[in-house]
Image (cartoon, rainbow, N blue to C red; front, side, top):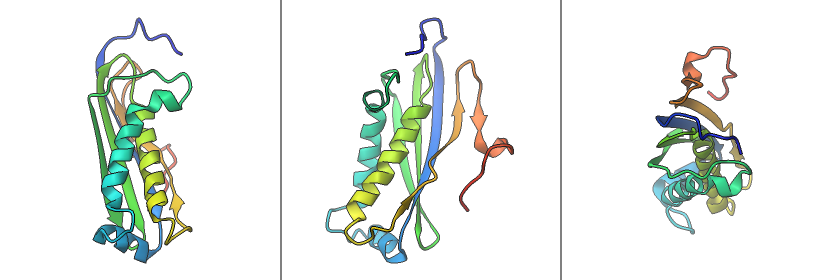
Length: 153
């Protein structure tokens, strides 16, 4: 692991996003809460939060962190796309980008798992860091960096 013992303790925030593209009927089924496995969005929200908390167990050399806040939000976009955004916060010596990315990834995988019986053609992604703040490396905001690759609609 990277030695963070000399780093300053600062308030750090990271936002990541992702999407699941699916059949229109699948998205409607999710929004109506009409699935055999239960409330897809609430289960995916819990899975994403749990994943953020376990990131160090999943990614080698990632620091275990005592997260202070994890928020997962879902928003339909058009007829066939479910957008996912995670926001993770900590006051600490290292950032929470990996935790936010992990939360989005596992939330998307959970949506897939809960709906695969009706739509095996779902597509996950892109999953990307949207913004981060805190720490010596400075802030990053994808919307403020025109040189970053922009994907999606």
